[in-house]
Amino acid sequence: MIALVGRSGSGKTTIANLLARFWDIDSGKILIRGTDIKNMPMETLMSLISMVFQKVYLFEDTVFNNIAMGKADASYDDVVEAAKKARCYDLIMKLPYGFEAIIGEGGSTLSGGEAQRISIARCILKDAPIVILDEATASIDADNERYIKEAMSELCRSKTVIVIAHRLNTIQNADKILVIDSGSIRESGTHEELMNTGGLYAHMVLMQSALEQRTGEESA
Image (cartoon, rainbow, N blue to C red; front, side, top):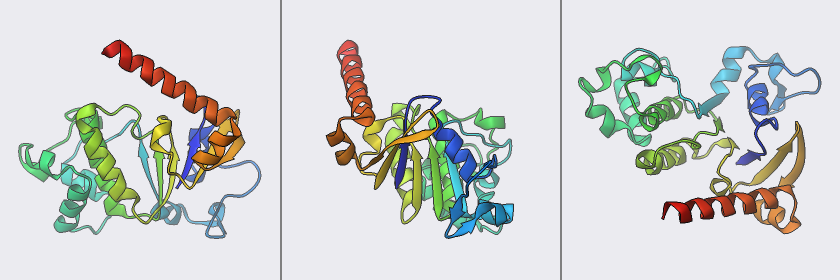
């Protein structure tokens, strides 16, 4: 698990977009298992990567088809199993027509947290070895937070995970944290190592902790 942290506009999402070849790099190389991604067919590259975004987009189609697009030959049982792992099976079964219920364009008929769980089910079904989480838990509502964290744990099990983190307390167990600033890696290490250096990361953690404490006192 590698976490990318930094101020807004520092380049975190740009890195994720380059990994998935939404944009191409001007110099250097991006390698997956020693192979330059520019030499991979796009279909092969996409089969290796799943991405979960903060802003989820679902298609105006059935719940089943929205999940099943993660795997073209998925059976009904495969889709149900993915939904259960993503903690969205119960909410689907409460919808009129269950898995055959039509989702509004962009997921408009679901809450943000519900749509997020369905998008995670799609990624679980796909079972790609690399998972990129782009601020995926930054704006979820409290009612869905526990379910989404459980779904994320299922999605990331035995995977290479790259997390773009907004809440720094969610990535303290990362194997490596990269602090991005103005498009460059300023610091690199574990949470403990970076806190001990007292640099940019430590400052960000302390500032966020103070803000959360102040917000908690005001709400109380």
